[in-house]
Length: 100
Image (cartoon, rainbow, N blue to C red; front, top):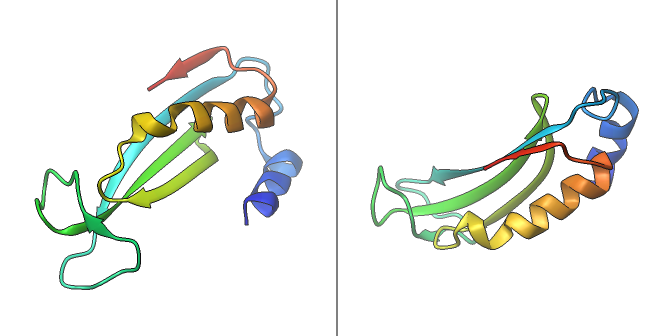
């Protein structure tokens, strides 16, 4: 899926066609209350403490998803900053500004 996503981004994405590149790395918590999901664990979910959740770390540039990592609920996004930055730099070529 990642290979297909990168191919579509290279062919049609605006973030690769403009000169100034701003990259935003963000983490979101997605909880699943009352349902069991594979890999979801109780974790850093401030709104529903103790419920199963996933941590979704994403990298965006010009409103386009560049890279992503989905983890168990107890994993913090700072453990993936280097990985997400590396994926974005490899795909975009250069990064002028990084927002975290």
